[in-house]
Image 1: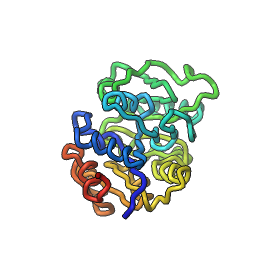
Image 2: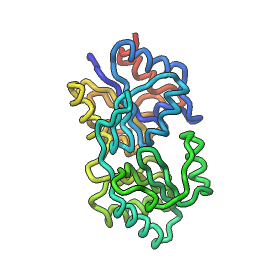
Image 3: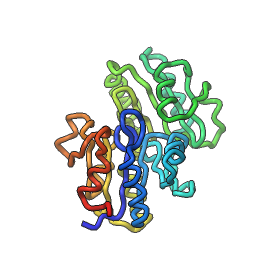
Amino acid sequence: MNYKIVFSDIDGTLLNSNHRMSENTENAIKNLKRQGIPFVIVTARGPSGVYPIFRRYNFVAPIICYSGALILGEDGEIIFSKGISKSTVSSLIRVITEEGWDCTWNVYTMDDWIVNDKSDERVIKEENIVEVQSTKGSVDDIPNGMEIGKFLCMCNPDEIDEIEAVLKKKYPSLSIVKSSDILLEVMEKGVNKGIAVEMFCEKLNINKIDAVAFGDHYNDIEMLKTVGAPFLMENAPEDMKADFNITSSNDEEGVFQALKKIGLLD
C-alpha cells in the first residue's frame, strides 16, 4: 500500500525507556523526509517538551501537542488550538484539593508549565524526562485570554482509576484519559489525538486510510482507530492488544521495525 504520512507518539513509542531514540529510528525519520513523506509528532507533551528532541536529533516536524489540543506546523505556525478555560481549571484544582487525593496538578499553556508543588518527585521526574523546568504558581498567573492547552494530574497509581472516574462524572464536558499509570490528561471536550490526526490529514489532502500511526497507551486509541495502518507497541497495556497490529517494544525499535516491514524505508 502507498502510505503517505506517518504519525507517532513520543513517550513509550518513539523514545526508549532511557527517553532516547535509537540510531535506526532517527535514520528512519530522516529517510521518510527524503521521500517527501510527512512525519508528525503526536504527543501529550507541550511544544517545549518536543523541541529538545528536535535539537538532539537534528530534525523538525509538525507537532500535535496536548493530545490534540494544539497543532503546530513544521515552522511553528499554529494550525489549531482548543484550550480549557481558567475557570474550569480552577474548579478542577478545587475538587482535587477537597478530595485530598495524592495528586499533584500541572497546567500547560503554549510556553509555560505551572505546578503547585515543584518539589514533588513526580514533577522532578517529568522535568528530567522532557528536559523542561516547571514553574511554581497558580492559575491566576496565567494572563486572561491565554489558551490553557492541558491540565495534568500526576497521581498515585493506586488512586488514578478513582480520580479518573470521579473527574469524568463531575466534568462530562471534558476529555479525560490516562496516558500512563500515574498521568491523567484533561483537555477540552472533543479533543483527542484521533480528531487532530484526521484534521491534519484533511489539511494536507491525504486520505486517513493512507496514514500510519504508532502509539502505546489509552490516549493513543482514537489516533490508532483513525488511520489505515495502526501499530501498537509491545509495551502497551495488555487490554489494548486485541484491537491493533503489534510491533516491537519501544526498547526494540518498534517504530523502525514496523516502517521497515510495511516498505516505507528505502
